[in-house]
Amino acid sequence: MVVMNPSGDVALQQRDLILVATGLMLLVIVPVIALTVLFAWRYRAGNKDAKYEPNWDHSTQLELVIWAIPLLIIIVLGAVTWVSTHVLDPYRPIERLGPGRLVAKDVRPLEVQVVALDWKWLFIYPEYGIATVNQLAAPVDRPIEFKLTSSTVMNAFYIPSLAGMIYAMPGMETKLHAVINKPGNYDGISSNYSGAGYSGMKFRFYGMSDQGFAQWVASVRAKPMPLTRANYLQLEKPTENVRPMHFGRVDPQLYKAALNMCVRPGSMCMDRMMMIDSMGGGGKHSAEPKNGVGHAEGALEKQPEEKGAPGHWSTPRKPGAPGAQQPGAQQNRDLTLNRTPPAATPGTRQSARA
Image (cartoon, rainbow, N blue to C red; front, top):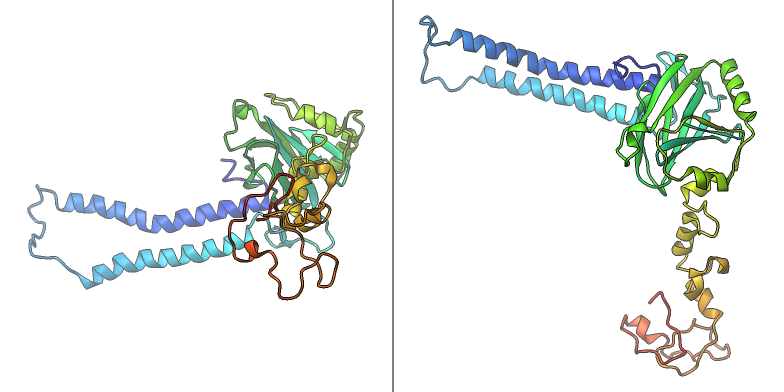
């Protein structure tokens, strides 16, 4: 019943889709059920007045009705689906607060960073520098932009009164745009099984007036405990049926570190790792994060060359430079011909890019 009577405009439009799709299907289902009952009664064995035509097998008019009506329903349903898929794309910022009420161009959405933990929800408000666990609040008629990730396994963030569910996955960020139109206390759940504490992975979502939301933010800011990286690592440990928690201050880079799975000291962030890979790798010593980012060629240039060592591939030098081969000489022949290089003698190094 919550899904069919939501308090947010996005969920309301999704409800309308359910009604439209159901109505279109009933255009076929109701006549078929009615005709089934009618035919069973009319052509029952005891009805001697029913017309008996054992050789009848075709009716053009009947074929047109049977095929035309479902075809028209599919066309209409396809058009509605195509339009709504784009309008209700969770990554697309909302353009209206409700029927006939557009979002003003100068309105700034409320950004909420969401991290699915085992088995609780962490909400970070970067605009206000606060964070909560298993408690979420937002002002009425203000667009909300959720940015979601997960610390371990995939979860699904779902507030039935607000909008459809969206997945939260480790090492990835998903987005959801929505708006709440009525003050209230709403259910929030995880709708994707994620382990032993899944059934207790619930939270409360409060729709508030602007004044009420400002008071709520002030009350959270008054809490003495900060959400540091050390506190996050403790919070990340699996716990069940967690009561709401409030953090008056939060590390501004915490969500980015959680997204890139590098909250723990000494771990390399995924975005940094992917940048190194996109640049061709960090060479032999890239396994040590302290050496930083570099091309494989850059790493090779730092190593001393052993001239004449079989299988040694050095970075090509410019013609005329000391040690460079003369024009016309064969350079890196094994790489050019895509052949397996000969085994290297002890002390030589081979490019990881081969």
